[in-house]
Every structure is written in C-alpha cells, then in structure tokens.
Image 1 (cartoon, rainbow, N blue to C red):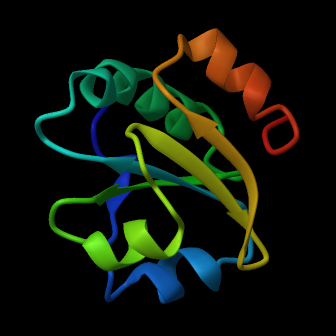
Image 2: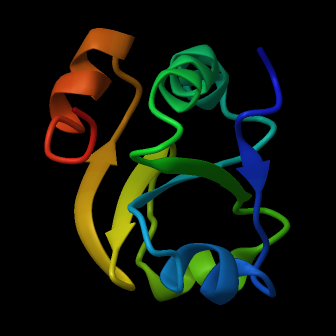
Length: 109
C-alpha cells in the first residue's frame, strides 16, 4: 500500500502544499516518534481511498525544521490540512483511522 504518501521538504512545501488545487494533509512527524508510526497505516489507507479529494504528504520535522517552526508545530504527530494555501484544520496526536476520517469529513466525501 505504500506509495500513496509523498514526502515534502522545506524547499518543496510551497509548491507541493500551498499551491495545490485540492486540500493537502501534511503529517508533521519524525523517525523517533512512536505515535507517528502508529498513525502511518491509517494515513496510507485514507490516501488510497480518497486520492481525488485529498493529498496526504509527510514532512520530517528533524530534517525540515523551518516549515515546522513557521506553522508552530510543537508536538507530533501534528496533521495540518491546507486548503488554498491556508491551514483549514489541525489535528494533534495519534487517533484511530475512524476518528481521523471523522476529523477529515469536511475534506473527504
């Protein structure tokens, strides 16, 4: 199932996320973060089920601290949904897939 989620960087964030014509969920994560690894399969499944409605990308905060700092990411996982270049929704912490889907109901049909 891997392959539905792309990795973005400080350098590609504006082009890949802010300039997107559909909502983009950014998973701010790090290798050492257990809860980040816990939600990864749920995010992969959501990305696979709703490719036309939402794009899901990951941003490693250790490798890309500028973007994380710009958006005030203090704890991970933080999931920000960007729509039209602005943060439309923020979800902090690991949640089961069903809870993530409820939180994302405005963006996925």
